[in-house]
Length: 618
Image 1 (tube, rainbow, N blue to C red):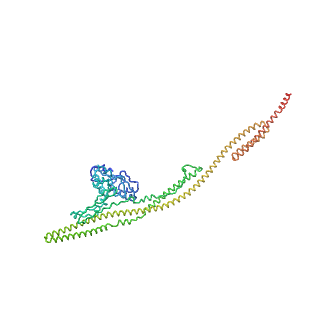
Image 2: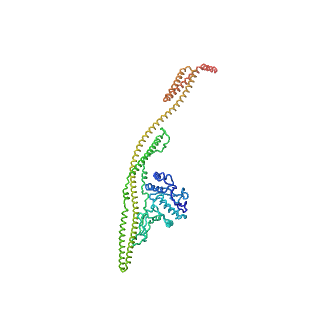
Image 3: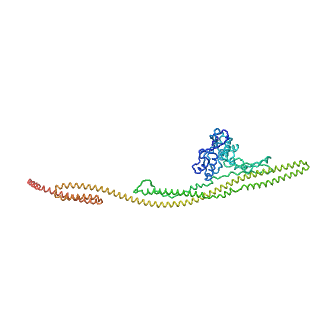
């Protein structure tokens, strides 16, 4: 911490008007509870990050009560710098040099003044800075304490007492840490003066002694020093000798002793059972005839079912969380022991008992002292019987003065010791009561925690049964959808098979059509051959007519074949064989006819040629 760098001129501000400013703020202003606290803290929403000291006091107290103590969390504020108007220009703020760095609000903190003063006194960089004198540091802290009382409204008992220069130097040299406490928690022994003027002073009340100004001790890093000072022994007829009773140390507050009910409620979760999915991409595009159609569609349906189960589980968990919150809110807190303890008037009996005991003790001692004086008086009178009456009168007056003086001294001594012991016992008892209050609060929080845990178990079972029923219902629905998809897939496969067969038939039609074309070409060829043969063989007219009839019949068969595709191949083969046989017959017959004609034409020449040959031979 670099304190006192901006304003270190040794000038005191006569008209203090302290403010604070958040630097590097870490306060979670999105938290609904903190938002509510800020809205209830003056004009903080409008002046942020600047804040008045009274608003800072209210803010830290509410954060401690509503967040730190209730939830056990540590509220981080960031660094808070303290500002004051510039004497030369009251409209401009300047730094006082004091900063509460890394400010946090804890359940066991006293107030922000105590935290700031302890941090400044214990800051290592401030201790090692030779340019910073303790007088300047003490002046700045004194102004801060005065402003905290005037502006923030702290009481005198809420403020710490600054250490002396020697104590600060000794703490720096021995590396001791200060842990200053509010003065209302510190009680010191009251010194008994043996001066005659003491009897004439007004006796202070018990309440004033309880708020007496006491120096807070420096703290070793591991333990506290004694928080009381020992009064020197006073000798008033050996009546006031008494060893001082050290004030008890500050009650150690156990952090995180408050159970976080909200976290327990948030921890309630439902673990539903999900359907397993195959390793397929549900986003791929498929049609019913696809091979992976069933897997893809089931993957989509399963994902949708799992999403529904998760949403249902979230809704069920939220519903049970609301029920748990309502049940915790409906728990009636048994505050009777706490109220009875706080309402008990335990101070009056303690005061009366101490007063009675010391009154009796000092009464006896006073009687003995008076008896001793009477004895001395009688002896002096016996020894001085022959003295003058004036001496006797003087002795009587001296006796009266001695009695009055002794009575006053013993009374003052008695009252001081009574008041001191009462103050110590009251302080100790208050701390014991605070411990009992904290224990009662802890027990109450434990009761709430166990109730939430019990309801968590029962609600978990009920939620799991509900989700199990949903799972079974969805499983039945998914199985029905699966059968539907399988049926749709089988129908698609049948359709595709029929389509494939139709395509095969189409290809066969094309092949048959090609065969028909070949047959037509052959028919044309036969017709040409028929025309050629008509000119040569008359006998073949009947055959030609027959072939013509067959050709016409083949054309009709061709038309009929287009309508009756299934029988076309067989008919074609039979017809082709028949045509081939007839063609062979026709060819053989034609050859025979030609040969016969040739023989007929060549017959005369044959014999003539034979005869000519014979004659030539001769």
